[in-house]
Amino acid sequence: MDKIDEWMKRAFEEMPKKADQKPLNKVSKHKKHKKKTFSSKKRTQKPNILKGKLKIIPLGGLNEVGKNMMAFEYENDIMLIDMGFEFPSEDMLGIDYVIPDVSYLEKNKKRIRGVVITHGHLDHTGGIPYILPKLDFPPVYATKLTSGLIKNRIKEFKLEKMAKIHTLHPDQPLLLGKFLCRFIRVAHSIPDALAVIIETPIGKLVHTGDFKFDKRPAGIQRKADIHKLQALGKQNVLALFSDSTNALEEGHTLSEEEVKKTLEEVIKDTKGRLIIASFSSLIGRIQQILDLAKKYNRKVFVSGRSLQENMKIAAKLGYLKHSPHFVQDIKKYKNKTPDPETLILTTGSQGESLSALTRIAINEHPHIKVKKGDTIVLSSSPIIGNERAIATVINNLCILGARVIHNQLMDVHTSGHGKREELKSMIRLVKPKYFVPIHGEYFMRQAHAELAYKECHIPKNRVIMIENGDILIAEKGKINKSSEKAETKYILIDGRGEGHAGSRVQVAREIMSLNGAVIILLKINKKNKHLKKSPDIVTRGFIYMHESKEIIEEMKKIAENAYKNIMKKNPGATRKDIKKYIKQTVDKYTTSKLERRPLIIPLILES
Image 1 (tube, rainbow, N blue to C red):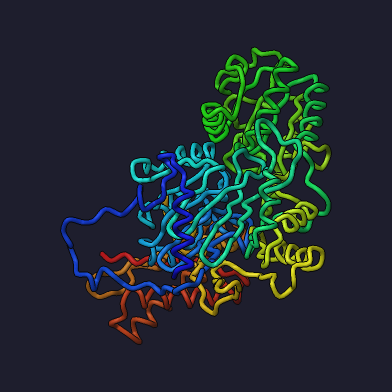
Image 2 (tube, rainbow, N blue to C red):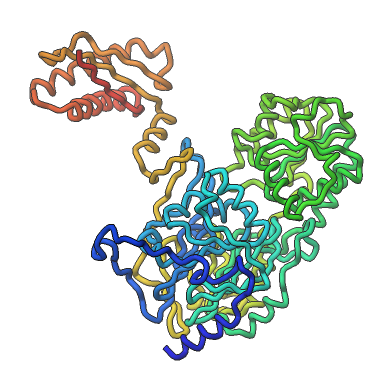
């Protein structure tokens, strides 16, 4: 323990003096209850603490692009990095978001010392309002812009009084239990992005967050702190956890300065009205567009709530600079501004069904109607799974007479993630003993792993592939995968509600989307349990009208006979048994007759 005591002493001596960045044990201790309301046996369940060993547990971000979250555990202390969500795949009908499963953390929530957020994108912050309450609101630490965005989202959920959001400074360390965190500025597609160095009694870990190396970033964004990364190469880093999103892309990511040149060319040469759609979090890109609009005498109108909110927060915190007279809400746009002097900035570059650009494309936007001569720019790249929706929006805009420019035609967007040359640079700068590719689908991370041992000379047996829920154990300078695994189900967010993948609601939605629904209404005599009349049947999305009469009549007979049969065989059958039997009987008919399996819903009314 002498070594750990010495390490802890050094860590405390290096603590920051700022009030909002004090260690948890000084600012965020759980308050002691004056009265014990239940026995300690009930209240305390000893966690599985590994003495002198470090656990590393990815809870999201390793089987998908999104819902990034990772836990680090040393004895009685746990710290977390990121708390994001993922947008649903096409088969998740009616689902808004998917968040990480934090069952493991809920069992150990009293040991959580804090959450560090690497940057302000929703795939790293979107899960915060849903997850923080489950964990009794551990303190959250983030840079100024990221904190501002988080506080705004927390406010929407009316959690601002309970959530503890602290602003950290990248040049000051932060102590969370036995974890001493230091920070490195990295370039990304949003300002204030960080990589995190985690110093532990077992060794030093580096988590890159999302990053790229851009010598000419957009707006007031800063370049990566290369000197800090170079210094790491001499510090015996135990493990590097690195972003894999663009691990299959050769070369270097296009600089934001090149995108600005292309946008300037478009804005300068466009004679009519200009509409530019982008992500609401691309603060640097938005600054470029505002600067170019001013240069070429175009007044800017902003459409989309998330875009308006983010611009307001970024401007308030000094990350976005513009004169208020030429940036206005879209509600003030009444076609009085000449087309050559108009630039409309909007959300919806991913084809989201309720976004401003989608409503423009289907002619349902209350303030903007597309006309011939309009130029529409999609300053974004498709998120995996959104390609079809984006193609539909582009198609509809072209039909309405607009000229549409996207990244396949001109360089109007660049990724925030480093390509292969930048990924190699990160590995070569840090020189880790072990390498763990994170953030991305398995095939992306596999490509990153191969890059590490084939081109960066990390021994193959020290390149570790893990998935959500896997647990790495670090001790005595070595890292191994444990046989233990944390639970990581898909947690679905539907509105403000929450459920698990595979739930009956989700299965029912999928069945209805493929084969429609059949409702069978049986009216029963309450006294003798006899059918009053032949069942009524209502269908939705099941069969075409010219087929319906014959098939529905047959289904009525089958449902009636099924009811009579089960009541004859089992007069005491419960409603649940009756419905199940009728459903199975009708299902056999629809499957054999039509090769379709609709959602069958028997309803029993007694009177």
